[in-house]
Structure formats: structure tokens, C-alpha cells
Image 1: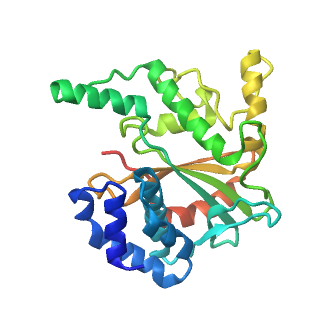
Image 2: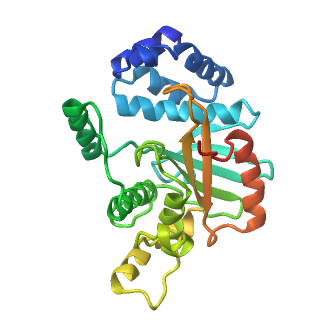
Image 3: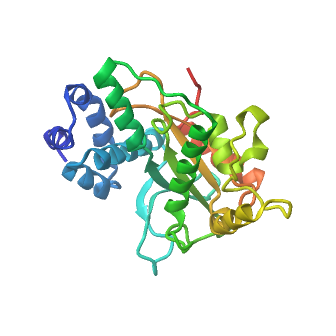
Length: 289
């Protein structure tokens, strides 16, 4: 891959001058990955991109992989857990303690109706305002949950990723949710999505049943149905890594920070700590501005 091919891909994908201004920094990251010889399929997809959403998703993978690689933490791209299945997982990292840590990434962009509403207001009055209320935030958290769920199983509950739960395996869905709630997702939204209402103080509760939350006989029937729907993810997924673009870094070449929500059903504290040590070497914990 040559730098000019990157410039052309940015243009085809709708990138304007502010994106092109970051070509040199992004190219340095791409070239670093290229030199490892382990990211050919990723870079091949990137150079052929002609769609904004797809291009940004691939750029997320570049930034994610680079932060590991530059710290000496090797990543392997598109790895199968089960040779009998067609699907692969985006990244595999062999952690310091020997655990095989699988990462499946998803860029979660702002919902189109919200973007359309903002653009409509901007066209009229050159400004926008949206009231973030309980129902709005609940809808956004449910959207995050569905995105995570759809990475692991289909609408019938059939597994589509993460087929191994061996003792040395750790399965993590990675969500870049920086833009999902006007760039204002916080740790309470992450906790609600994974652990539900019991994990947060009353002011943050949004009547959400978490992906990793245990069912309870006192819950109503609709919650029992959700708990059944989440059985596979609760017994297969070890954690959800929420990514955030560090404040004041680029739109294409940026730095990532994170919150990691572990699933206590699948992972014990000792294993979680040794894997977390590697992850935080690459991607530091989120520090809101």
C-alpha cells in the first residue's frame, strides 16, 4: 500500500480537507502495521474503500491495532476460533500470561434520525439543541446493547462469533461509542448496557436490564424473556471494551481510551487483571475532559 492510495481512498469515501490534513500521521500508523506483515487483509480493504462508514470502521481498526503494536503487543488479524465456521474474529492478542484474547470491533455512529434532526436545526438557525431525557438515554443504551448482541448472535440467538470458551480464551466485543450519544457517553451508560439498573445510583437508572445481569424470580415476564435472549452472550462473552477518542486528537489519526466492563459469569478476577494489564498498556483508561 502506498500513501497515494490512502489519499485516494479518503477522497472516494467523502473525506474533505480536514481529513486529508491527517494523511501523514495516519500513513505513519498504516506503514508501521504494514511492516509487521500481519495486516495485509485490513490494509487491502482500506485501500479499496469507497464508503464513509466502511472507511471509518477500517480506520478504527488501524488505530486500535497500532496502539497495541507500538507497545510491542502483537495482534493477528481475522482469526478463526473454529475452523468449521465461516466467520472470523477481527483481532487476536496473546496476552502476557498466555491467554488468547479475541477482539471483535464495531464503530457505533450517531443514529441517522438524530443526525438528520441536528442538520435540520443547523440549516434553520445555525445551532442545535436536543434534550437528553430518561427515555432518550434509555433508547441509546438499548441501541448499544443491540449492537453488542448482534456482534455475537443472530436474531434467532444462534452464535455467529466467539465459538470457544476454553480456559485460556477471552472474548471481548469492542465498541467505539464516541459518537453514539452526541459524544457524551459516560461510564454509567456503559454500566447500564452491561450490568443494568442495579449497578448504578437511582439518578442514573433507566429501566435497563443488562447484558451480563442475572435473572431474578421477582422480575416480570418481559425481563425473563430478555434474560433468555442474553443467555448465550452472558455465557460466552468475557467483557465489553468501550472505546473513546481522546479529546483533541484527530478525526482519522486519533488516540483511543477505554472503559472495560467484565462479565463476572465468565471471568475471574485473577485472569481479568492479567489481561487488563496488557490492554491498558495499549489503551489507557478513559479520562473525561
